[in-house]
Length: 636
Image (cartoon, rainbow, N blue to C red; front, side, top):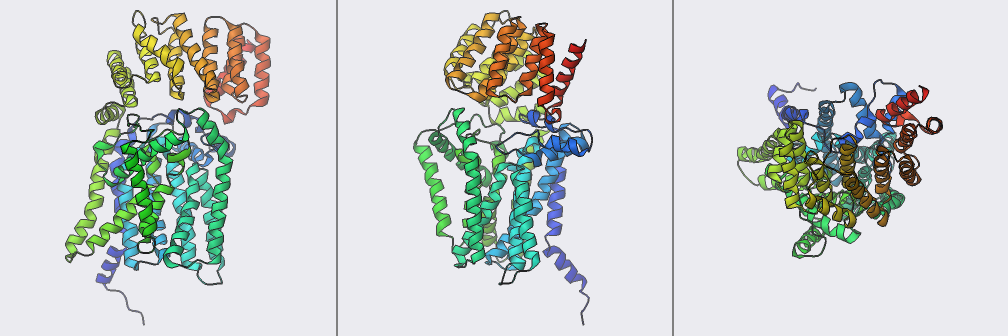
């Protein structure tokens, strides 16, 4: 006969359950982040979010919004779909996007607990209460870590959060199926259902949120291998799973190889230089995860000292990485969780922090990898604390870690409440960061303090004299003076002739020429502006930077059109179209050029071609409005 549990047994069950602790940390973090959700959009937010704006839940509109994102080699339609839903539910202000990022982060905390627990059960090394405790503390510490602040509050990093969320779901469901129905020869239909759910539903969602969702499969392969090496047990099905994972990941890497090679054509580093630089940066990531003091954090990290040759520092960092990997291999039988944690961290950095020539350092790249380091630290702390006899001391020591992390998160998130606070904090922590100075300059411009804005850019150039984009920005800040500063102008010409032209340099040139064409830069003479753009294009042509030229030729074309040279303007626009024949923006520039030259028959022909070739729902509202504007002009 079953007896009703006593109140004390109910109380014990409540305190042993992870639910109240997860609920508590979720409530605390939700409250902590609320003021920071009012902060500004940043960088790629402006390029990605407007494209996914919708005004109704029409299926066609949702699908078109999802397909507008062209980030990465395969597109990220799952993330774009979520942006579209946010724009419909909460509007286009930053609060709604960041609020949804936060809610997804809180869900991810639960999934860190779920997946970690399933991994620990699969390893079969811990008692049930130890498994629950390690998984719970890992989830809480990871979720409360101040390193997560910039990922949550940088709206476009919804992509990173979703990729991590679905990756954890993939890993968690995979091992949940193994733990509950995967033992023995006869597996139930539930086993195959959950395996299908993991590999055919949640994994593609991870991958099409962001390409590093591929690491969900790598993590499954890693865990299967570690389990085999630690227990010397490996079933035929597990062997087939590992072989399938290696084959699939290799295939995707080969498909992506052309994209990587193309990116190196537009990079100022070769493969070896990048790997040397990243060895130092990954060591910096480790430091930030283990010692998360808020005064160390920034956002841009363009001020980090780069080492692209073997020096004493880079040799030390390489030795550190090899030592940790060697330690992971050595401990595979005695401490498999340490092995998993180390390989989890390095494995999840394989794409964005090794060969692919992206920008070198961003905090959000640690969103998934950091779980590996956190679980190691948590395990070591729990093992140490368990040797203390006094239960109260044990509890206090375990609680103190999430408390300290939460305190640092409060301190850090408080600086993200508005543009002024963020800019002041970034400049204070990273005074030689040009991007931080530029953000501060933007704040001053919004306050009509142009002298202060110019001073921020000058401060940047004093510390970084080789930054071409900020020399162009400085020329723009000098537009209201009698003439452009000659020393700065000559140095800009030299840099444009000889240095690598980044996409940020082209963006800065675009902004400067817009000031000139809108009669807001009386200091600039016609020959000066043409010389700047001409040298930039010559540099790009010399380096065969196709991506850069598709953006630079239209800048030159607009300048020619501004001065009435419509024939040369058309030549520049057509050069851009030869390199990228599917650019609606450039096609519309040709239409505007024909209208400006009073060649309405050509404009009508170009508009007819555009109508036939393009689906406007897949492009920004701005381009669609320009098209409609030109249609009205030609009708009149």
